[in-house]
Image 1 (cartoon, protein in one colour):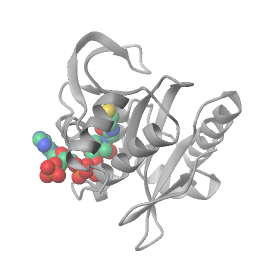
Image 2 (cartoon, rainbow, N blue to C red):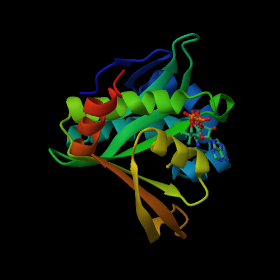
Image 3 (cartoon, rainbow, N blue to C red):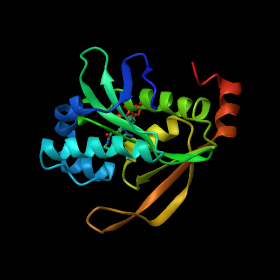
Length: 188
Ligand SMILES: CC(C)(COP(=O)(O)OP(=O)(O)OC[C@H]1O[C@@H](n2cnc3c(N)ncnc32)[C@H](O)[C@@H]1OP(=O)(O)O)[C@@H](O)C(=O)NCCC(=O)NCCS
């Protein structure tokens, strides 16, 4: 069961049907969808199905997708999740934000909280992430979160249209994370 996580400006909670309209606002945008690794949604009905499918995965042992809610307005402005979860081992961090809200530190804030939850509560040993080579913004977020760049995976990702892409691989282990906490108090 996903917790409700509160940060300075955001609430993270399990995505639900009420998020359909706000989610569709950015899930339909081809450029955003491409970077996030999904096919652009064609209508709100599709968005609702995607939400239902992501909730269904919890019944099969996955952790679930957080909706990112802006406290100030109550608007759902993005999604963040630890997907591809293997119990007592690892998961992959994925995130996407409505472009109206880019470059205001929201994903760094949300992802920091999700990484802390992943290590402290889910007891992961490793969190990994992959980005397209030209997704500089996403790479910057991962670097700010102290993920290590582990190399380029050639043809490491296949998109919904069958095209393959080289991707940058990043990871952080529980040891890296707790060493940082001890040294820098990064939870503060
Ligand atoms: C990636 C994404 C989630 C970032 O969200 P965000 O809330 O804008 O991220 P933040 O504001 O926390 O941090 C972005 C950082 O990238 C930097 N940045 C933005 N564009 C950049 C560029 N072209 N080159 C280098 N750095 C860039 C910003 O300056 C910021 O760094 P700073 O805080 O040191 O100034 C958002 O761009 C997005 O939703 N993209 C589409 C989906 C996606 O790419 N998902 C990730 C798949 S791996």
